[in-house]
Length: 254
Image (cartoon, rainbow, N blue to C red; front, side, top):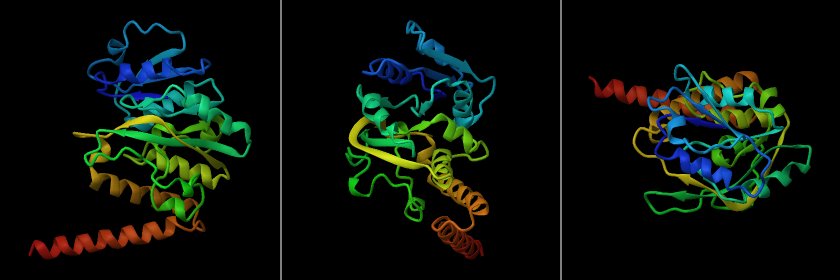
């Protein structure tokens, strides 16, 4: 599943990396989320029957584009790959064996980082805590590099897919729902992808909006799973932080 919006500078390389997989049995669904410049223009000449392109008439955000791809997917497994990221050739070959265990609903791996401002090249860091698929630890931060997540399609559909009411953190929310539904995760300790560090107006550069979206996410999750440890603590901590911020803002305006 590849959502695309204003990604014509990078999407062709991302798609070519899918074409280079050592496993040939796959389908790629590109969802152009109403880009001013159609993604199909950047992919012209890549005539492969395994590649499908859908286009939204209006922008529906990353979660909406992923849900469109999820509905169209015919394969039993679905993977996330944004239009500015890349898989290594052995990504699928290395990840698919994880699903020989019927309890595993999601598998992920480490990834290299391109363009990190401090030169960091390793996304995961300490591999000893992975796979991370249990609360309360899972609530501390999202452990899954989105571009390396492959999931059972029926598991994703079973928990309702991606939350389109969230501005960001929709993948984190989905993983939390999978854990709550009883699915286990597996981890491959290899750099099987390349994550392009976000710049400009990318969502992950807008820290304040991301912070508020994660508060909204955990509030909603806690209402559905009030006994789950971890999310409750996140809500309490984040609400307290918001109250302190409001007090400081009020004092500063006097």
